[in-house]
Image 1 (cartoon, one colour):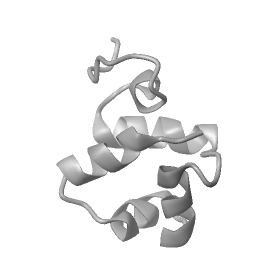
Image 2 (spheres, rainbow, N blue to C red):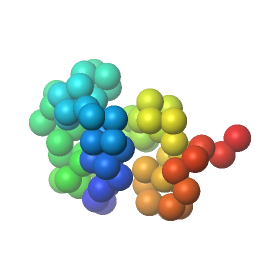
Image 3 (cartoon, one colour):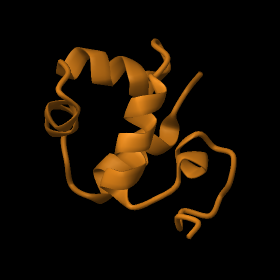
Length: 71
């Protein structure tokens, strides 16, 4: 699965892949593979990134176009 919103969210915060990878505790190359869809992103990372970017997991996964988290 391709996750284009990961790149968009990261760039909106002026972050590089290495910074997000460090937040997740993984190598930059692994994170790059998540962004490009070469590797499936584990659920716990989707949840962590949703919290990090203050958005919903559904937005990251492309299930909604609303970036606001549901409260």
